[in-house]
Amino acid sequence: MNKANLIRVVGAEPVSLEEIYHQLRLSPVDSSDTTGRPDDGLLNTYISTAREHCEDFTGKSYVLKEYEIVLSALSGDIELPNPPFAYMVAITIDDNTSENTLDASEYSVDSDTDLYAILSPTGSWPTLATDAVARVRYVAGHGDESAAPSSVPSVVRTAIFLLVGHWYRNREATADQLMFNIPLGVESLLRKQRVLLGMA
Image 1: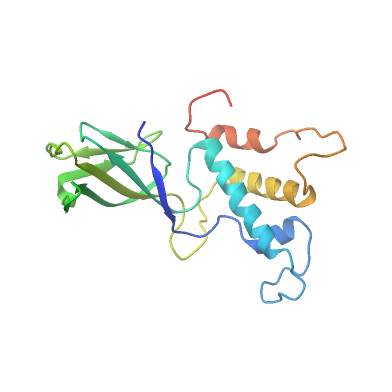
Image 2: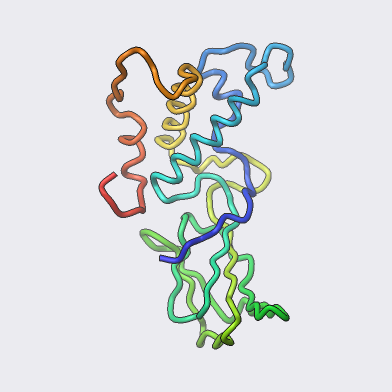
């Protein structure tokens, strides 16, 4: 499996600050009233961290992101991790002196798969020079660039609510009281969403 490096987060979080205020039973929940909301920054951090935790556990992207895979050779089909696949940005060949962008007609993407989208050449891939690399850039995730994604599964949103609630009420890395995982907790909710292999 090729490693996909995160270039940037493109879209909005799948859970809004107002939803978290409702979940935590905090007031006010109106985003225009900031006078009584000293924890907005903290809660926004928790939302992003909870979403990243869900992504790390499942291997999926729950917010729209741009990724890059760097390859020293182009051969056969190329798996594009962190589904769901949204669209290709470009494939460029970089030999340290110039960059050449492949035409979109030279490749295709099959995203109708159980796991990862598959990038394939329509003919054959170009041969790379010794010091050249291919940079495959694509966007994956839910939603669009202007609105929070509505297609994120409800079990994932619920897991984010649970994580944010736990972190908000427990501000330290350890606690004096004995704690137990609640039934149907975060990992139970996320397990069926996993595309990663392993026993976690």
